Image (cartoon, rainbow over the protein chains, first blue to last red):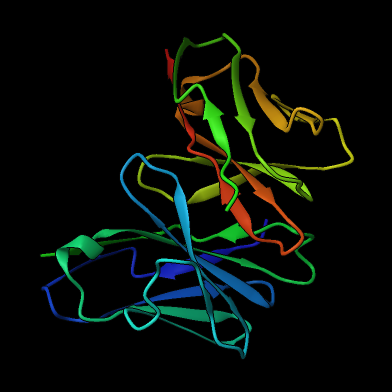
Length: 116
Length: 110
């Protein structure tokens, strides 16, 4: 299947700093990328949908100014957690889909964020 | 938003036994997908079944879909210890957005 990478895989930061997470589709053009958040032993919660070249669409309850999403190219989307706080600690997973993906979303390996 | 529910939440079986997980959803869908997640890792796509399909097989996996009951099941036959993971169903609507169920944590004891 298609490959989606995320970087970094783990990050520890101090409260108040900003953290950028990258999501890359390595072997296909991802017209749409999704960002999910997952709490321990819980399911995935969709945070936002981003289409290449457009502003992201955020789900209800997700602060767009706190979770900045950029999808400037067909292979890269970034999620920036601004002024991170301990409650932002979580597992963030991106997924990507494209015209040739047949409706399937391909998931990245996830990024574990710990805010101290 | 629609939310899939999975049942059971946790399942513990012996190696060699079959594991069945169920998923129910609330609104109409385009397709339903099953994913696997090993602890602390990303998701791996297992199988996709379209709304006009009733059953699909992939190796030791068998997925059924009953749109009249808005439910799906995932059967893993002849389970192995390596099948230990969390399994999620996710439905896709016309907007191609995935909505995940709560997941089933499967433990296969050697």
